[in-house]
Length: 269
Length: 184
Image (cartoon, rainbow over all chains, first blue to last red; front, side, top):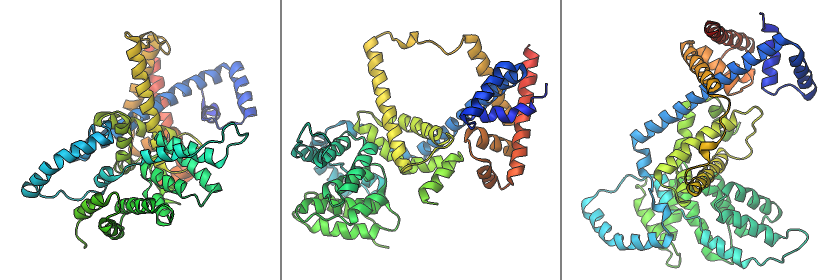
């Protein structure tokens, strides 16, 4: 049987390209025309098998890339189970080990080459506790017919705290469209972008960040900007300048981290 | 075209280098997510592989539009996969013995066997095809790329792509028909 005349129409039907009227008329023809029906079932099977076969290939390609990266040691730089521990437990354990490790490191081990991604993982904290404090401070007026700005910001920060960053991104962006001067929303949108590895966008938000009423948040913004710069090509010296200022600032809560990171940066070219 | 759109095109074309780029740029993001949500390093690697595959499935849908960034989409996929995985583990633990065992299977065992045999035959036949043919079939029926884009990627004219697509698919058709005739 010559199926050629049917093929194009069948493919259009299967790929959803036909409009509603053409689709209906094709389905009616399928009911009446045995040859068309036979050709349709054959093409459906063939294209289905083709799709499954390419699915397998895509999985194999991903698996090969995965194995190649494993062989390179790409995954061994991970934090293992550390994420399961609370921040306090990590901090306590880190403090207890710090003195011992520092001695061993200083006398026995050479410094590891600087890896921006690993440095980011070690130093980036999404500030969920700070988000929680802000959420508690945002008092709802409750039962208002429309959502007010306080409710909108609270909802966005709740999404952020739940680590639903894509949803938080939308909610914070929407809020900022209507309240472009809100520094809290701007700060957390930048952290959301960082959590989603969008460092250039985060850096743009943090570069213009200013909050005269909350100098600590301003310093934190500069700290996170430095972390963003370290992830971007050609911005390492900008990061170094920021870190140098923060490392000298006795009033900055993360002064020690800034010093440590600065110490690990390779020397200027 | 923005960098993000260029990268999307590479992924849509199913390039292995593009997969590697996703790993290098975004693995740590997904790893952090999984670790924070109670998983371990092995979970993170499994979730990332599943998420990358799901991302590829998403972006090859006809009419797919990227609203935002690839990393945002990947994060949302990874988070969903992880939450579903956790939920299904809880259901399994709660059912001790498993409802899953009683889930209806799609089609009869014989139909499933026939489907598997057809996929094996198509996979083998694809391997026998010349590289160009395989590519044009993949771009057309898997990546769902428009003919003009396929022509651009392969350096051919659109008319040539159309003919090539028809011939390559016809070759597969013949093999499948011959095999079906033999079994009947």
